[in-house]
Length: 181
Image 1 (tube, rainbow, N blue to C red):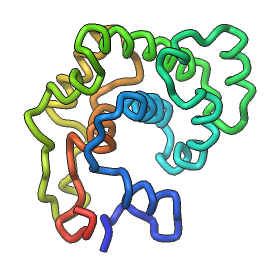
Image 2 (image 1 turned 120 degrees about the horizontal axis):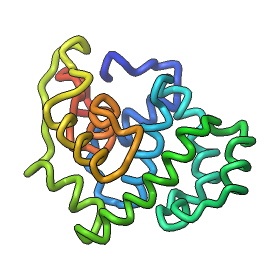
Image 3 (image 1 turned 90 degrees about the vertical axis):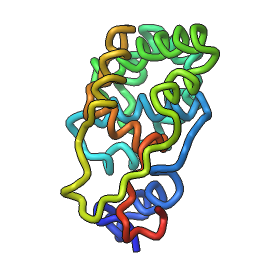
């Protein structure tokens, strides 16, 4: 049994659900990757992002925030011409700016992991039976969003941050019936 949102005929979704979603992540590069991908997803389906993830990893050179923070105008143009990723100028520029802010947060807190996990004492494990119970955002996602925006990040609204919290395991919203809970 899996969560109701997982289309069983989509192997990328199944793999993401089974191996990543709701699992605790403390790796800064992975935390950066997911913040970029969640921002890129804004207004689109997560399926679109998952289909493009492999190309994103190549285009973003492994999601090293130090490398992404130094992307030039030529690199931006290269990304805009890359059909393997979401070619949205605002989202691409945001990802570069967010890399710079990410590095500032690392410098201030020692790691982005310490910063983001500092909002909670331990993972929040919810006990929802149905998808309709799972919120799109919470007071905590509001708080994280507000703080990241204050620091200069964009494409980090409360709904995006709640999805991010789910993707890095701050929140475990696997339904009660899900064997991956």
